[in-house]
Length: 170
Image 1: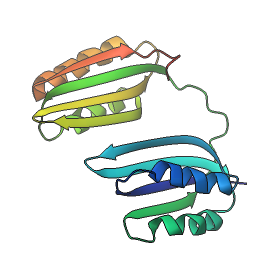
Image 2: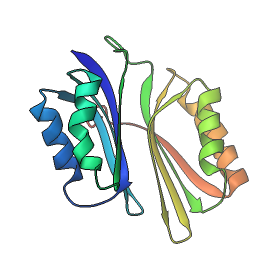
Image 3: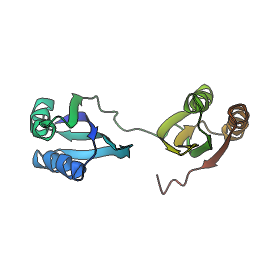
């Protein structure tokens, strides 16, 4: 059994998730982690599964990309083994007028504090830009980090909040 990372991107249409999931299930691949989204009319999916060899999965996904509307890639990845939580889970929310560099600046502050971004989503709605990120922070560092994030947000002219995540929902 191989652990595989698969990406599927392209013009959105109904049924992409079902098509990919059916192909993988038909091969006996177990989907372990996935994220899927629609980005301004484009579909993007990344998933990790355990199953047959990469070449077999690539061949099975080829018909889905035959019309040129989707691109599917498959690569073997090294299993992480049993992962232990590296920190305390928090949710970062940033909102304000759209401008270049918001994600770069805010995630740099997190990285410099030893935090790790585990999930991030952005959305532009008119002139309002919204960032929501799940982050793992080193124990006892949230208050200090919140102050640094607030200063960076003020420099950018955006609002920011950092709150503990509900571990039951993650």
